[in-house]
Image (cartoon, rainbow, N blue to C red; front, side, top):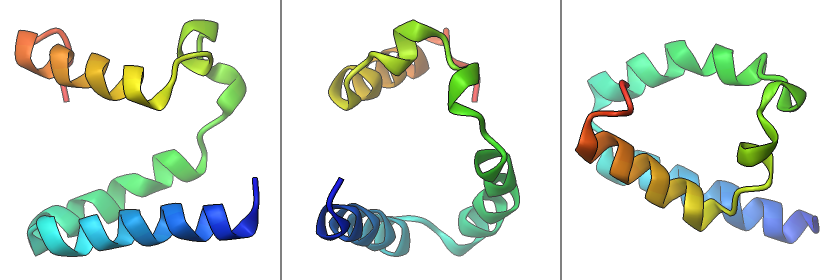
Amino acid sequence: MKQSDIDEILSHINEKFNDDVPSLVKIIVRKKITKLERFEINSLPSSLRECTVEDLIEIVKNGLVSGNLKL
């Protein structure tokens, strides 16, 4: 992936995180981010590794609405 694409993605995430997230939530997320830093891609099931971002977002939304995803 090109560095400009990576920068664009990170900028978008930073913008959304700064604009839409209350500061208390930011504190909690920063504490939990260490799990993401230690995350091993190979530990994912193949269905998740092969899933598109659009599909993943839809699956997460539906999982939250239905109660099947416990966050």
